Picture 1 (tube, helix red, strand yellow):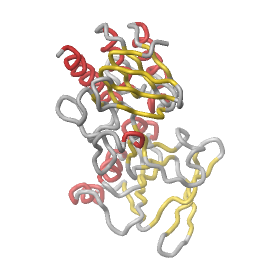
Picture 2: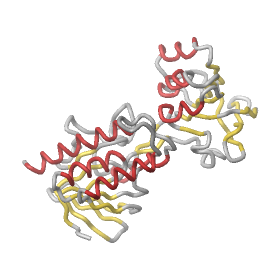
Picture 3: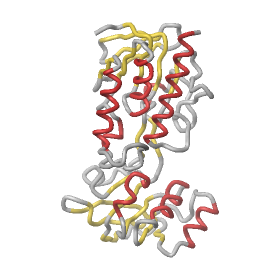
Picture 4: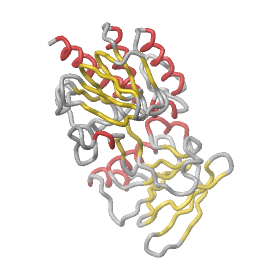
Length: 306
């Protein structure tokens, strides 16, 4: 494989693939390096029903289409690799993978994505996508007339709990503290919603079921009392973790570990741009990632032409 490129894109989710599509179509020699499976978190989504122009599609299928578009335009892709060294400060950027191969480029787009913060309790991995969700927008309508739990007490948890009452017959908010971190008006709206109940100073200790989630064990953090509750689904909103650990000593990150960018999606290093779920932003959807990838690619092309 060639080792010298115009642009290297680190991350093969919707943002990275979109950047690859635009760059390769613009006749820029482009390489996408991805640490996991191509598609990012999109491949974990059972059904995507809110992507404009596509009525309904499996997340894995959508990612495959994006990948094919990128490669059809000439973009090169390597997946399941590990970035082991970064040299981004000079006019020629160098990226080493697997402690072995080094690639260089005139510009880099960082789109490593991120992951929802997990509770890390028994049964969580087993029931992901089988009753446990981290995205109300993605999965809310699968719980029509069902009873669900929302875990968390920040803005995302409280606002999504209220939104989920459009589908669920009952929403129980489980929060570890005796107070909320969400905005007062959001808390007031949730408390006024007759479909929402609250279990405070508690957390989920275990997820249970046969093939799909059927019950949870709730632990009271003051008394240590355990209570088993039958439930159809659980939505977890306790924070978001950007996949930026490898960049912490290389580029500027905010207090949340998100990549700081300017209006041109450029980082503090000239020629290094960023897009997708790892940048400082509020909303994280496939459509916003695609938008980020587009803007980052167009600004990268301008940088290369200057």
